[in-house]
Image (cartoon, rainbow, N blue to C red; front, side, top):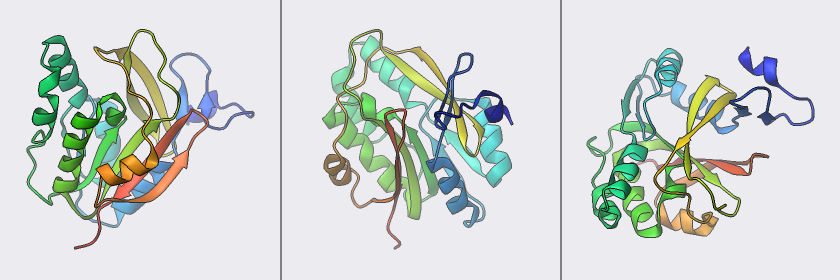
Length: 211
């Protein structure tokens, strides 16, 4: 596997090698295991289009995937001077019907949103997920550093590893979220799995309660 070519014995979660790095994921295999029991699954990906990811999830789950790319939406609003309109825009961003989706891949989009926009967006996964559906999200834990802002495109290598590729962004990350704020914001979703990685990120699987 590609992962094995780069893996370092002293840190099983970060593989430097040549750029871009290969980074371990602990939540992805849990997500896949959960979805494999559901039959014909439907996913929503809030990140940019990544052909390899579409192929991976299609092969693993035989699922249907909708890609919405909220990062493009954020850039468009910020560059167009309409960032104040983001909460209203995100509150009705997803076109999928209520209770129609098995999983939402949010990646780290919440890290870039101020509280009003984040709270507006949080209602959309809650709305579109089926009972027992899952939201996969990644949250940074470090203080925000000043510098050229960037987004991270995550490419799935296999069930246990991702490649991280940075690309320019119009806005930077907000201060890290506190657990209690996330719990309130995403109610009634509850934390099914949570992993704190050596990459200073948290991977969290939120689950919608059964009907």
